[in-house]
Length: 257
Image (cartoon, rainbow, N blue to C red; front, side, top):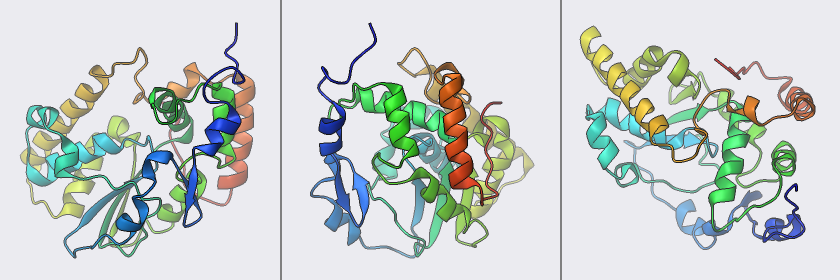
């Protein structure tokens, strides 16, 4: 029998009531009481910010940035709490007045599948609706952290700014060498060809560790994950919304490799 939203802990109304707004952006309940303090967080000229929409490979990018900037060993990174080295601030939009920003975007079809699985596993949200309903919420900008479409397009428009490095999640699997080289240059890390190749190999180990340690039966980090979940009808509707909201942008994504 298909799962019903009406007889589960998080019906659409109950799910909706868990959100709150801060500066016009919808946020999940675990952000309550923290936003004013984060908004007043002091910035330093040496700060480097990693910015993503949720489920865009944030943790993996943290580890790769740490490895490239510190020359760390991937096995050591696997044993540490990366959030202690690169703290996470749940802030809806940090703005572009930050000194240096590394932004990563992920194709929205894989992202929404991973976001759905995350919401189902998250105790504070306890989502038990269907994926179809969740996907509609995503397309209509009814999930936490605001519109993905606006989020990625704002940073894409600033991709040529000297203080912004715009990366794509899929390039970690498609062209890792170029991505690592871009990171090294942006971070001011000097390295010769052999050192760069070593960093690429270490980053590749991190990516493999991430996928191999995935506890779920389906790796949420896989490119093309959406093809196992989307129906033909859902895909057609998603593509129509995507064209409507991204039609004026020249930002493109690899939806499978």
